[in-house]
Amino acid sequence: MKITPSAITGILLAVLLLIFALRVRVKGGILPPHEFAYGTALRDCKAIPERMDQFLSLDVIDPKETQIQTFVGNRSEKNLAPLIAYISSRKDHDFGPLIAVLKNADQLSNQKEKAIQLVKTLVEYKDLLRNESQQDTIIVFVYYGLKQPSNLSQAAMVKISNLVRQLDTAKQSVKFDSGECPQNYLVGNINIYPLALENTSWHNTVAFASPKEAPILEIRFMGLKGIFRYLLDEMTEKTGDSFLHLDGESI
Image (cartoon, rainbow, N blue to C red):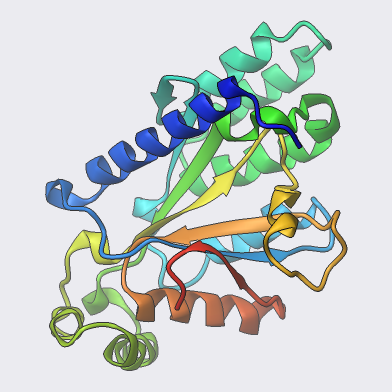
């Protein structure tokens, strides 16, 4: 696939906006200690919202930390307005019904439910919206965060503590075990690409066992290695899906 100059500009802008967003999201503007991206190949697009729901419903995830942020070009908002404006500007199809559904979804106060409803809606319109050459110029980030260690169940606390002790630094392990650790240890995001919902470009660089058309759910994490290992292990146990390294650091 040929990448145009405008696409490159869009990608660079999206990266810069993401860095800015992460600085804003973590307390004190401190950059996270890591950046990981792992993905799993799903059976079809209808499994994307299902897997997102399962991930965001893990007991260790803090519902108050889930937040949607939409990036379209140089516009960024903590809602779906930039995406709705972009779709409204397209003249290649009558997107009136889609826009109506998205506007209703944007009124939901529950951020997890808003994210799930968004992706369920995008599944229905994925072929009409498709523009893979511009995939990275429009991204919906679904940010998530873990509960503070003191608010975890005893079983989860023990498992994560052991993984942090194995995979992270002694200083980070002490912070985690104290029960209250920096917010930037705990945050990540799920990337949604409305113009290429299947996100199959990862098949070009990662050897998934699934067919090339299998959609890829991309999960990113910026905190401690041990925490992310726990999250991926929990998802594998719950769904049977295996997660492969996409980019950034590996665990």
